[in-house]
Length: 212
Image (cartoon, rainbow, N blue to C red; front, top):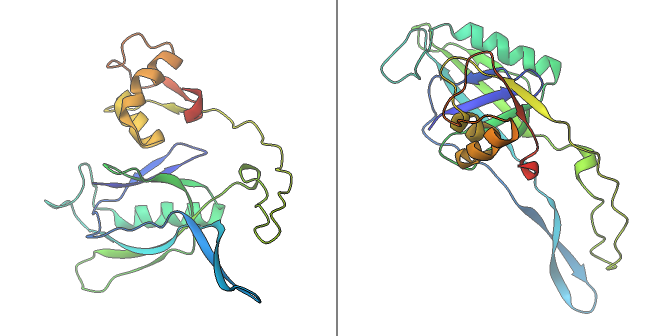
């Protein structure tokens, strides 16, 4: 399992060099409790919950047997990238490989420092799930049973990704949609005859999942 951050705007990817021992996300809808005069307390569906988590990551000062492949041992280069994304307010895809977790987040302030004299850097990230306002219809009024009109949905923009050495359509489909089996449909969408054969520099269009 690896934890990957991918910038939605630039397609830059950052693979965290060490996977934490545990990782949790929160998904679903909140429950609201109301006190009714005649019936007592009742529970009703509330608003959709937004994932909000703080997580500490280790950035080793050198390549070690437990770091991800290709780790350069430059922890502050990673810190600088995370701080830049936080300052810019960039939307990132939080991807946890081998799991269904693949959703947009914003980074809060990036806390970082050293604590054991080895040069290793510990960084604490505040991860807040991002939700575009136009994607959400106005919530149903649960108290009255009256439904308000949903706001018009804007057409989702199509993004693209430039292939680098080592990429496969399977990996791109897994990172983007959380489902590597969509590689065949992604190949068909892009006019790629052989889903197992893509080249560095090739631009792959990444439509909304529902368009595949």
